Length: 160
Length: 128
Image (cartoon, rainbow over all chains, first blue to last red; front, side):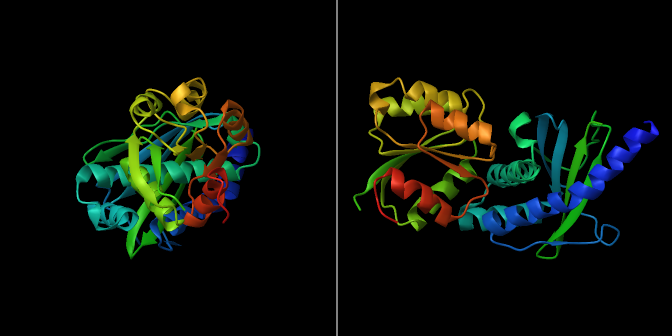
């Protein structure tokens, strides 16, 4: 990466991270009925038992992931569905939709980007024994929010 | 308000439940809810159900929401049924495409029950 690209990448991270955090907070407040707060990443690390991901293609190209432990994913599903959320399938579905809405809300907030950027349908991995390799090698933004005290990591990796 | 039958089209069963709950919270009495997980299933559902309202996502496998709206517009059994899109795709271009294809309303996810009320009641010819 040359110096110019590096500066652009850093500028993107600085400018877009607050937008990503706002997108996350809005989705949780509206769809889960719960306010989440941004936390210091050094103090909390989620046990990544559930990973939801949505691909972005077009003017933004990369992947957005949402990771949390199984208990937190189950609690999110319960908050969205009421007590009817009882299967692992529903838990995965709920987390996938949260990821989808965060990705959509984020791109809709970036002026001039939303028209030329498409989202994939969500994919959800359960179990933490995997390695993640993305070809999106440019900007990487990560925010950590606390949902009822439990950490949820939201990462956006974009091609340079 | 008379009870209605709603067709909810979304590949997420969680979202279908949330949309149904939002309709009830908006004061819309539901006689029956028909669910479909993509546009192709929704077209089949329209042939065997008398539907008063369709709420439809855009990004879905098999057949997306925009293609569904275009094809529904040519079906006799779908004539006059208001379609409201509920989607994460919030761009002006998507709104224009959906409305041009025949949708009557557009709600961006994430959405509140009030937003559902605001967009759905007018297409049902009801006052808020």
